[in-house]
Length: 142
Image 1 (cartoon, helix red, strand yellow):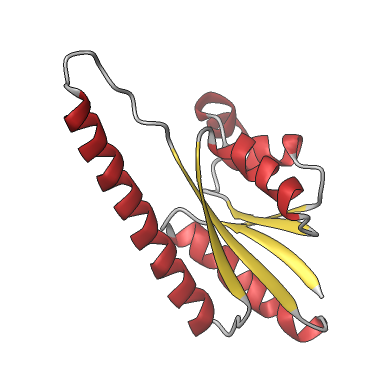
Image 2 (cartoon, rainbow, N blue to C red):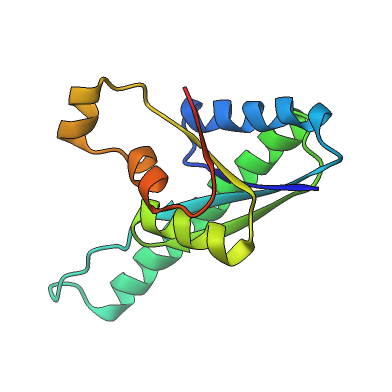
């Protein structure tokens, strides 16, 4: 069985990564898919009381859960059957690479935004950083 981590963020690029994984399914004995979403750590200020910080954290968790639920539905619609999710918080590339190691996946699939080399250099790219940090193969899906 091939174990895949698919990084999802609700974008069309992430959707294409899910579809690419589904196309791999006929060539394997089975696929075990983990959809991972990493949300940024919220920046709090001492201007807000802790109650507001808790409300913000709760809202962010709710948004992340909804995004992952949508990604699971999309994966099942694409034909993937063994799908689970993992919610992470932190720097996206670092957390994706860490989760891949912790989960023991065989490969990471991540959508790219299709920027030029110059655009990627100027704006940075989560996908590029994942390639550099990951200990497993990374399939970039455009």
